Image 1 (cartoon, protein in one colour):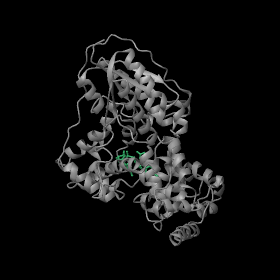
Image 2: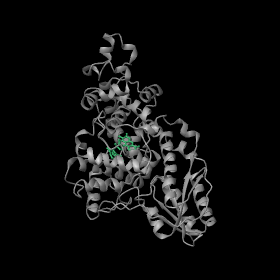
Image 3: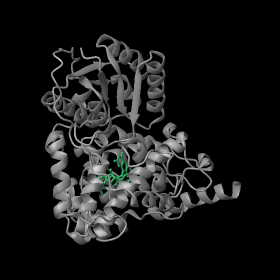
Length: 479
Ligand code: FAD
């Protein structure tokens, strides 16, 4: 073994192009790649079988890409995060490696695990280098004048744009092929029962691979991004990039996305084509919520960002929760959205907001119940974005929707799915309904003796609205 061999630990960065740690590692010496699986953590973290299956399938894909670079991949199953440090040290010693490279992750457990890894390598007098790769900027480097993390998105974005103005970093290339190390590594099996619970057509909806992710990005930039601002809220149109699963798994990088968008916009990010700037704005929301996760670790523990909202008497009614989960609330847009989630592992952003608002403000159910169900199904489940979206909707979060801004699910339905195309795609029992009745179909169903096919609304929106407003107002009085 060469004296300058290093371990490269892949995590949520499952690609070879524009992978900061991989690129740096390959520029430093010969590489052995490692991927660690923690099946027990999936249940604890409510990771969805869809997301896990998608990512494990990508491991095999990544392995092929690494083979072409002569980089061997070691796959190991461990029980717990705190076993990572010992395993990595013993592997480094076994193969006479000088150290370890990896890209940073931002959940509290991940940060603690990585701190332990750094310490162990330091104690063993081996190098350990970690990199900002998932984000444009390291959390903690975008702060206000008092040195604190921003809590308001627009202020965070302004500061981030100031920093971005000086930089237009090109995505890094795939490293060059290394000399063969001539070692055979033992692989743990990737066939895991947990993945059997994933939806059957997972890869029809979500084909894996770095190349697929790049094609999606290019298609979106070439054909859709300029109309993104106008069309992005209409779930019947495939007007958004649908890149979230690929970004979550790291099959594509944030810099590749930003670079493609900027190139299509003459290098600009804050001005120019409104569709492109709007899309970049969404990429920055992703960045914002990850900075929040690091700046305010209570968020990782599912505590409300606004501590006073602990006192909201959220309900845990299991029948209401079940109706929402199964898409049987009697509100067609909510039901179609929930069925899209369960059937495809993904949900359109406008619908995520509608169903989250409905769960918290119409049903007054605890937002954590919705957050958990989303994580258990989403292929793009991401602690920071999911928690951020849920707390925004529940008005418990940073820069959240003000408590009195409550979506009316029927008005949202009329506005964003006017012909009921989306509803009909996911709620087949409503297919015979004419568009003008689709948003509140019960009277039509009754008249046509079809009322047994679809439920009555499980809640009166106006009454529920008053109740939740009262609960939030009482909170203000206590304060
Ligand atoms: P596009 O509209 O094409 O946007 C491009 C990328 O920007 C997305 O892929 C995503 O990475 C990022 N992005 C867009 N909107 C947001 C946002 N509001 N917050 C953070 N990042 C954003 N996104 C996740 O990736 N994982 C989640 O678990 C998740 N849970 C959510 C839960 C709720 C209640 C809400 C309201 C939103 C949630 N989002 C989540 C954000 C958003 O809905 C998805 O990122 C988006 O629908 C993905 O579709 P797309 O790739 O076509 O997005």
